[in-house]
Image (cartoon, rainbow, N blue to C red; front, side, top):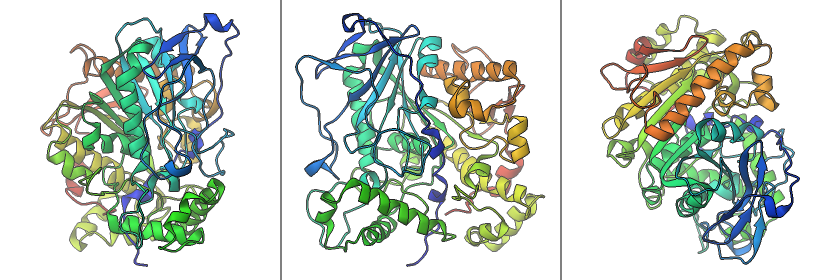
Length: 528
């Protein structure tokens, strides 16, 4: 099969972020626990550290049986009060993660953190987890919304969506295709969750007309995709993109090749599509593991799954849609970490080039003159550090700048760069790696991966940076401006000044921090 060159190779990451949940029990009698009355029935949550929390709320019918590989279906009403004190199942995914969470196909759940279900109209922040569209869940302890809800008087929602084969195979061009199969199911799930938020979040103290979606890595790609999705229009007002890859959508050709290759690994041919409905979910997951293992050994092939331009639900590629104004009126805050590629190139992750030899096939996609100019610009190339810098710029930084400058024509845009790192992270070569900003945004640095990432660092510095970042995210959700009500140094990004907030020991706004390399890259991408 002909290899296909793509930036989708970079999305896998933070399988690590599905770490185990720390949860404070609410031992009060059920009658004293917080209630919320949704359009489908009443749910009873818990009260933890002054915050009302509802876990494991269904936002669509279980996608099981005949609903496997179908678009999410609306809920039906229930009688009585449903318990919402425990997280629901995580969606089926590889077992090779640090998560000990129970998994199952009945996984379309969301979780809500709110100061109170009191009828007050608070800004709403909906988190979409990353994990390469292969792993993760909305119940990771790193995504606990308590601190954001308490510190910002906002309502925080985290969601599950279908992953791997169950969420991102493409069926339209499979020979012998039968009815009963939909595409882009993971993104369709996200739209269904946002529709649930629009319809029900007022019962939890949130404002359905002031919703901000935010996500990291595959979650950030989801945010950008939702900005371009016609059926998501009107479901959110603002978007925060953390380390996303705009050039991340599959063509139908690539998606069909990957789907057929996957089917072969689970013992099916193109005329056996209907049998996918009845295979055990463990078989589906094992097939995805085998596919991923094969792809990891192939230097320039797709390494993960991605949304597909199917012509209907996702009618255009992301950059075309944004350039055409599909996301007009949606304010954007977007940023990258200084050393995105270091974590992704680790041997056990392996989705980015680890050295100049592995990078060479991608550089071959660039015209000779441009390639020479790019290589010359990175003084540390071909050493590993130069490869990491080139990959970070070519895959994350420059495409995000291009994405921002298109959206800037239709809405307010703000850009940041996170570049803090601890002595331990510098010693290991990870530095300001992919995903490092999340413990700071959520304020969850005292346990799990948050604690590991910040090990040995100055606590006062950590909490100062975290407070700055949390306040910026909260301000953006409330005002559409990370500086608050027009105050502060963080001003809008535009192509003339390119103001960017640098989060570090000393945070400051810098004009065009990528100036030199931005001009070198111009319109080129090593992962086209």
